[in-house]
Length: 96
Image (cartoon, rainbow, N blue to C red):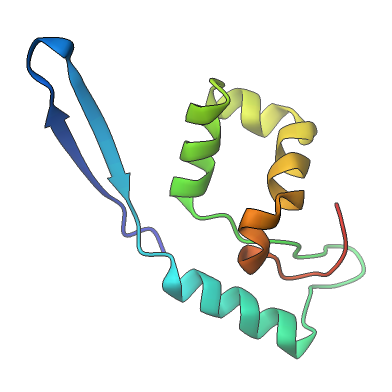
């Protein structure tokens, strides 16, 4: 599911930017299908959401945190899960 493309964009003496791009259409379709089927996992393990790599990377960049901080703090995951901008990636209903 990865399919991430990365490229450098040079800005002369100002430096460069690393641009990451990922087509997430198949991931969104998968999430919608799982949600509509009502298949949210088991009682022991609920599948709440699928997060594409670029979404996590973007969140970390915007909030100026490392991936380690993101993974180690449930509050970051909850904020991302409850963000209405990413509702298409949710599988199980309800807030986290």
